[in-house]
Amino acid sequence: MIERLLVCRSGSFDPYHNLALEEALLHRVGKGELILYLWQNERTVVIGKNQNPWKECRTALLNEEGGHLARRLSGGGAVFHDLGNLNFTFLMSAEDYDLPRQLTVLEKACQSLGIPAQRSGRNDLLADGRKFSGNAFYSHGGKSYHHGTLMVDVDMEKVQRYLSPSKAKLAAKGVDSVRSRVVNLKEFVPDLTIERLSDALIAALAEVYVPNLSLRDQCAHWSWQSVLPVQTLSADEFDLSELTAKYASDAWLYGPKLPFTLSVEDRFPWGGVEIQLNVNEGVIRAAKVYTDAMDETLAPRLEAVLPGIPLRSEALSAALPEQQKDELLSLLRKAL
Amino acid sequence: MSIPNELRYTKSHEWIKEEGDIAIVGITDFAQNALGDVVFINLPEAGDEVVAGESFGDVESVKAVSDLLSPVSGIVKAVNEELIDAPEMLNSDPYGAWIIKVEQVTDREELLDADDYEALCAEEG
Image 1 (cartoon, chains in turn yellow, green):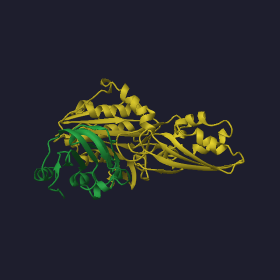
Image 2 (tube, one colour; image 1 turned 180 degrees about the horizontal axis):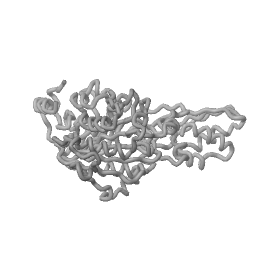
Image 3 (cartoon, helix red, strand yellow; image 1 turned 135 degrees about the horizontal axis):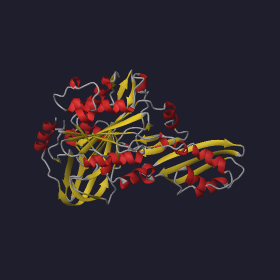
Image 4 (tube, chains in turn blue, purple; image 1 turned 45 degrees about the vertical axis):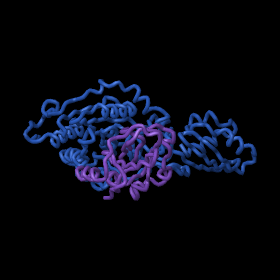
């Protein structure tokens, strides 16, 4: 039974730090405790645990424009975060985990703001038939978390830009994203801020988990710190350097054992080229090149040079032969 | 819900069948039903060590990633590679879709027989 409510807010917008803090909080949460963790990431695509980044996200474009790719522990599909989005995580022991009750917190918070929230069959939250909150779940070592996005004022152009489908033909195992029509909560509550939504979540948390608490009895301009039986938990008490490094590492982002094949093709003034790659753990394992170019050495040269190269812009750029480099890079970029 | 008599069970809803020196491990009908549609599985490799009560892999179902806990300590002799391409077999045939075979078993979790496991499932509803 939940007897202690704690709220932790990250002061950082770094996705790797924030995911590290989320994992540290999962280790930290004790029996009978519920931690509500609130966090925001700057320009980040977050993919599910078992997703292929090349399939889900335009990784090269995202990196070039100062964005971040992150992989979370929970399942599900790719989402885009910016500072118009608020993330929440409910963390607790597995025996205290109660998804309907946690969703009720979200619904009550939305209702208090005048948002007509409804649950979807995939445990997401919709308003007016469009999704504003995607939810996902993780359990490990007798602890569980339920987390999700809350889109307040997300840059929808960026969502399209970074989550657009790959131009490469890609055959991969792993979990595919389910595309949804999304909506910002600002459409329903024009003056909604992240701060107001955060306060509404904390108030709803107390309303759902503390019996006999009537928020109506509280004064109109309450500060939840002084009124509600909810304690704060400082992010500073955790040493997150190791976990942050894990979440930021190429091994975590690109390296899982998810073998896949991809094929890209294009036509240049000197001929057409099709490149087929076998990739595993983020590294090209084999390459097959088909071309009608006059240069008969092109195919064998590429087939010799590509295996062993990580499937990333910088590594490919460094490895490709100078001749036709720009064209070949533009071709391979279709896969990135 | 199906609970075959010849198997033994963990409180975390794995089944185990011991054939000679080999322990065969899977997840129960109750587990697959609670998980929902399994869409992905992360398996160990043959030769890996597993520890009783600790995670040896995980499954993803309906956006949830959950641990698979080993009922025994030992060395992985084989993994069911078919599950990589068809993880939904864990839903359609939980007792046919074994996950790992373990050899050199040194330790066991507390195991339940079918009757006790059925009582546990009834309790967890």
